[in-house]
Image (cartoon, rainbow, N blue to C red; front, side, top):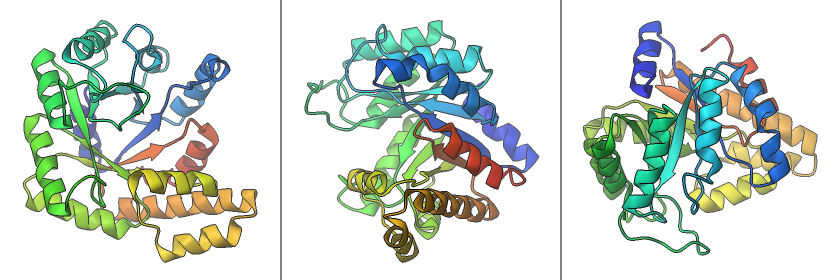
Length: 290
């Protein structure tokens, strides 16, 4: 099922879409145990699961396609495959799309991707909207895209960022997933701007439950998310107590989601970090809302 149909169905039910993100483990032992992780995540009944795609590697040896195939065929959940383009040429992207067709995977999240100094960049695609256009030409895929409530770090300003997002949607992206954020008001302001700009596709709120300080510091450096004062107080108070910070971080994420759902958000996308316990705690906290 294409993501568009999932959103239509959930809208008729008056409920938001709930989805997870996972990544292919880099360590061989963790990769062997991915089935246990998938089983526990799929038991939580997400509407779909997205699978990240690392820079470098072909469709033949990249585990993303195989994991997405398992999600669909073994567990009956719809997968979305991330596809980045900075480090791939058109021929390589075409090879990956062919593998997705053969696996009967219909949904792709088209991304420019981050620069990886260890992988040479290609020059067929400069921006995600160019990748969206190319995928659109290759077959009947549903294409999703990313968005940044607090503006992409490389964008000159928020207006330019919204303008570029509109290009992505006009090229064929029919659903957007936001970068993580910790201030819901930032998301609401961004959402309003997208509607004013004529962007009318569903936008999912990306939520990352923070369970340790190093994790949040790393992610904030990567994406530039703002830390509200109340969140900083949590980090400061519990930074030396792992169990307390774990509980407090999950409580903060649940409170974010409750507020988002109360404000009729299109969907919630949880960055699970391949941790079914975290996803399970959150789903239990919002089980009567979705």
